[in-house]
Length: 99
Image (cartoon, rainbow, N blue to C red; front, top):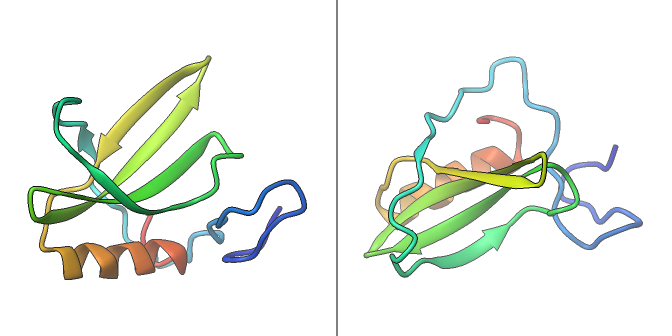
C-alpha cells in the first residue's frame, strides 16, 4: 500500500494514510446539481476505488468523495462551508484525522 502524501510507482497522485483510531467521520450527503459550476482545487489519486476532491462552488468549499463500484461512480459531498474551513478538513483528510 502506498504511503501518505507520497507518489506510488504506478501513479503520481496523493494517497491517503490509514485512518487514525481517533479519526472523526465526515458526514456525506448526495451530490448537488450536476449543473452547478464546481472548481476542483486538489484531489487524491484515482487509482483506488474511492478518491476525494477539495472543491469550491458559490464562494464555499467542500469535499467530494467518488466511489466506483461495478463501473458506476457514486459521488457525495460534505457540507458546504467557508473555504478556509474546507481546507482544514482537507488537511485533516490527508493526515488521517477524518474520513
